[in-house]
Image 1: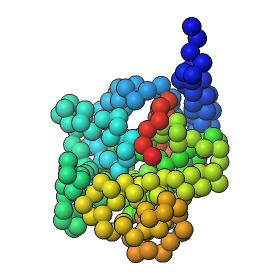
Image 2 (image 1 turned 180 degrees about the horizontal axis):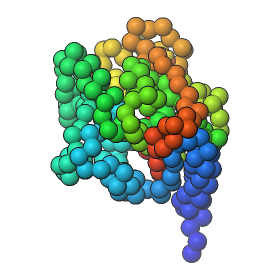
Image 3 (image 1 turned 135 degrees about the horizontal axis):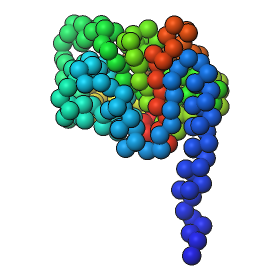
Length: 238
Ligand code: SF4
């Protein structure tokens, strides 16, 4: 008997249609883009895109962690990994020395490949992000020779206005709450308005996590193919 309560097929169709539209429009902007149905497909595509011996830098991204690419690269044993924001199982930063972290953040710019996620992509092919520190968005824009960005279907929005709305009212509060709940330096985040109430007040708190807003509208012709977007047909990240 037909199960009317199972909407997985409709959801898969809807997401795929949106993803394909986003991918087509990104490709018009000198950015490579492709669609893969699942995180398992994304993992195998990423492994193919990263040559052995390439130095790989990771920008903070839950989606990347859910795909599991870094442990796979470590298992492969062929790539040097640079990850200034790496945290251990207890949630503590692995690199505790601030100067060493800064040095690693600079080293990211000379790596071969920068792997990261995006807060949103728009149906007309723009990547909209808000960063606290700016290291992720700056490396996307003018960092390593090759940038690979994971974008799951739940990050696809209609336009830049909707992207900013989603990030300010959903992504940023959720991310700040994640830091509060999961990391030992939680006291920094405890008093943020979004962590207390779930709503962004465009605060001026000293620990504000939203400092740099970027819209990538495409690459210059000479940089064609530097940025590569992999859109995954399942919900990942925030
Ligand atoms: S309340 Fe402050 S830290 Fe929280 S989302 Fe808004 S601007 Fe960012």
